[in-house]
Image (cartoon, rainbow, N blue to C red):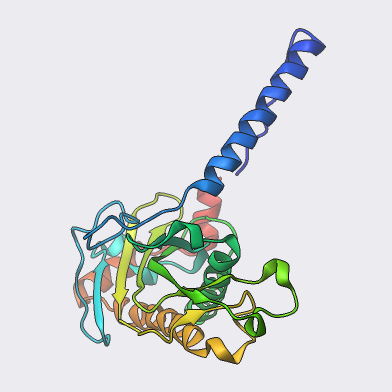
Length: 262
C-alpha cells in the first residue's frame, strides 16, 4: 500500500528547491536503473535471485534437471493458499554476454510472454490477483543466463523499425529460477530451479513473440517452463496424513482471516 507523505515547508522557495532536488534524484535513479544489467556471476551455479539455495533438492516426477524446495510446515503448505500474485519476470544475462547487445525491447519480449504464460498456468490452480493479502502467494521468477545471437534480418524486423530487435535474444541455455512466497510475510513456501538445454533454435527476434511463427521454439520453451510450474504445484500440495490433519485444523477461510487482520 502506498502511503501519502506530506511535507510542510516554511517558504515557497524551499518547496521549489526540494521539488527540483527530487526531480534531479529521480532522473539519476532512472538512468542508473536503465544502465544496470544483472548478470549471473562467472562459474556460479545460481544467480543469487533467491536469498538462499541451501534447501534445494532434486525433484522427482519432473523431466530434465530440476532442483526444488517445499516448506514442510503444515501452516505454510501450498494448499493453504487461495490466490497468487505473479511478479514481473527478471532477467540475468549470461556472465560472458555482450552488454552492448542488451535492449529493453528484447528484455520485454521475453519477460512479458513468459509472465503471461505463468499467469495462464498458475490460474488453473488458483486465481491470479494484483495485490498481496492473507492466504495469497507471490510468484517471483527469473530467466538466468540469457545471451544474444546474430543480427535480426530486415525481413524479420517487421514494419515498426523503432521497436525492432537488432540482435536475437538466445534462451537456449537459460535456467529458470522461481519461488513462491507468502505475500505478507515474505516466507519462502516453495522454490524451483529448472534447467534444460534447449539448443540454438530457442531465440527471440521480434517484440511480437506471441504472433510470429519463426520464434515458435522460444514460445514453446516459455510455455513448457510455465506448465512445469503447474506440475510442480500439483505434486507439491500433497501432505502426510499427520500434516494434512494439522493443516485442516489450522485452516481458516479467507474472509475470516481478512476480517481478523483489520
